[in-house]
Length: 151
Length: 223
Image 1 (tube, chains in turn red, yellow):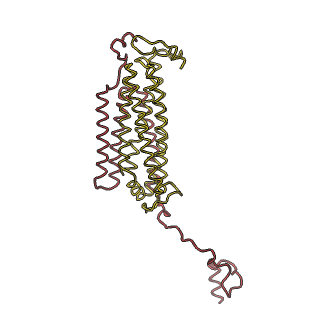
Image 2 (cartoon, rainbow over the protein chains, first blue to last red):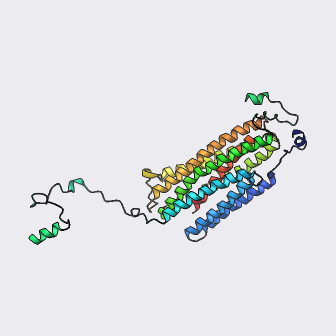
Image 3 (tube, rainbow over the protein chains, first blue to last red):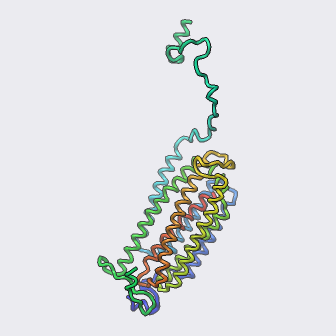
């Protein structure tokens, strides 16, 4: 193998881009970075922004994985491994977001914190005139109405 | 290190490749196994960051206004600069891989060192950003005292921000160490068309670090 490859200085199984095409790939990636920056400045609903940003990021990911990481020329098994990890990511994302998206809104996220109460202002005992705690819960069904009827 | 010292210099100007481990039949077989192992590892790295990205989307759906407000408070200039720095370092690493594969160890060395310098630049820029956040108390959890984010969920955004970028920065540090290690080996002219797996695998790791940033940048800074 060495004798065949060393003459030209090229490996026996040369694959991948040379510096020129790698530079082109870098240039496209930089353009995409500026395009995602530009898109973020356009007036549109935030969900569209999110979708556009993710789409451009996926294109950039594809370029990096295929040409910088050589998956374009890679063995099939490496493609399967990497794609599978992304499928698992999507499975995780889908079920978690489906759960979160179909729940009721968080009821406590917008309530301001309770005001601080000075403990010295809190009642320490029963109001004047009431000697002891009433027996039973005043609003318990049956009990309170019965007492009201006696009075 | 002793193995490399014992290896002879070939007439082409690189060290002869290390002996093939006995459990591999051919060089090609060995190369593919090394590459496959790295891709498996990268798959687990994707799943590690998957948790963080899912966390981002869950909290974003709970606190959309806070995430928008906080995103606007991050420095777009530094975020974009960091993206360009990382993309360029990915390009230099990919080119170093090409040169190592062609036995041009010195070219690969300089490109790898340039990548390490860019990694350091990335960390410095990240440091500037972290410093600004600490100054304005835009911090996670109970340390959050930043009045310009009025919507609920500000502290949660900064938990996601510091955790995601912190874990990413840790990967940058590991990647820089790996690149320095293979750069030293390039300087010793260890790589040749027959043996360049360390450059390739360290490069793959670095590209993954770049990939994670490709998603963090728009999600944190732009949306």
